[in-house]
Amino acid sequence: DAGVTQSPTHLIKTRGQQVTLRCSPKSGHDTVSWYQQALGQGPQFIFQYYEEEERQRGNFPDRFSGHQFPNYSSELNVNALLLGDSALYLCASSLGGGAVGKQYFGPGTRLTVT
Amino acid sequence: RKEVEQDPGPFNVPEGATVAFNCTYSNSASQSFFWYRQDCRKEPKLLMSVYSSGNEDGRFTAQLNRASQYISLLIRDSKLSDSATYLCVVNRDYGGSQGNLIFGKGTKLSVKP
Image (cartoon, helix red, strand yellow):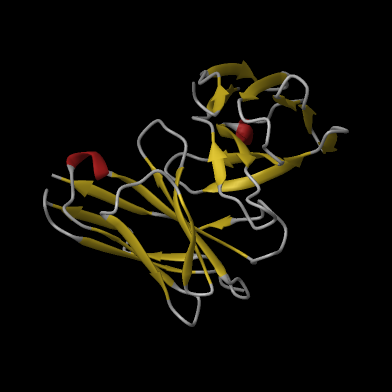
């Protein structure tokens, strides 16, 4: 049973560039949430996708956008990268309408903006 | 004020010690509570849910006090493998749908031989 997978593992980008991160949920899961974890901080909720729609959003600017595909996989896009966007980006999958909090995290994508 | 606050530590304890972590949350509408464990440069993993009646899982005991908006985690007989960052997590329930998880900054535990 494959767990949550994310790609790429690491990424280095320059300020002003755009980046796309990818996530495949755990088998059987239909909900994908994205989190940003800066060094020394806990993860911060970016947004959640269910049935190909953004269902909830955290306090992140419009530069952060996402998409969910019919197979439940998801992408996180960040435009006009800032140095402060450097962080570990975590994807978590869960079952919509199911047990709250039972989110399974992927290994993350470490983004460095220079 | 942060929505979930934890003492960042680090807590440095010898093997076999008992250690307790505390956490407070500010939003009284919070519905669900958890402890996650995160190893260095790894993803968070659910350690245990926290229930009002208190719950135990082996060497780990979690307590919730809704009136004081306070959550605790007790680890007995610490093992070297318990060394990690422990994240206190609350969930806001948006009208019945799954809410997002609100994480504290984490408490770092280091268990020494």
